[in-house]
Image (spheres, one colour):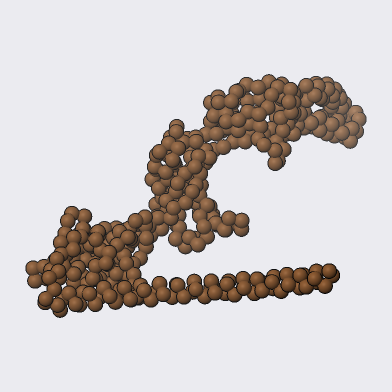
Length: 388
């Protein structure tokens, strides 16, 4: 029985090894077949182009063909020169030039009174909060008493000095005591003024996250308790990839579309960041936006920055451009011996914008481009036209 069990285990091991070898062989065969398929596809494309050329030659030479003069229906469009613009299309956000995060001028304190509510329009210098000033007022009262006593002592010492009684050191000491107390009183007055919080800018109270009895502070890293936003000076902020650094310039034209309100604004680049963000690998650009009640900070914006202009250029639909082993080409209409023929034109292209591509070499104004029915045409094929 043990002998049979050992034989069964041995057979299973051999079968598993055979399956692994078979799987590896199949994987290798699959890769080879994919490579062969790609090679055949490339050969087929080249053969198809040669076949089309031969068909054209045969159609021109075969005088017995009854179908060589049957025209192929196509659509055409006459080409004209115009400025060709290329835009960098990015996402941005609306921001405000004047966003004030209100903080106390001193260490803050307990809120005794609030004079605004969220959504209110406030003016620069308007009182917003009143903080607890009880301790400061008590210190001022004590200091005023001390100062009155020090001034009385100083006057007495001065009168005695004028009568040649007493020493100069006593007089100067009394005077310095008065000056020191006056400075302390000025400092307390400044501390008292800090218990009144004012608006630093005019705008709307966007957030108010403090209540009477709570402590109002300006601790760094904490969410602002009061935010005032002035929407009269807005801008769009965009993070531009670093590969466009040489193509974006200050003063460059820009179009900003805000999808939420379906509005587009024309502007110019007003600011370009001086460094590349190591996290996003981009740099910041800003552009001013007009005052518009519909615009709000942090709205999503679609930004199009003009980075290239081809003056007096030829632009064609990108879908009519074909490629063979010699490069890119299109078909144009040519009238020869009273017939309309399709002629193959090699071209060199430039920038691509949307569905249009700039043609650098190969076409000129007045050429009649075949825009529909160009598939499977051959050079010299008879065509007839319809409106494109």
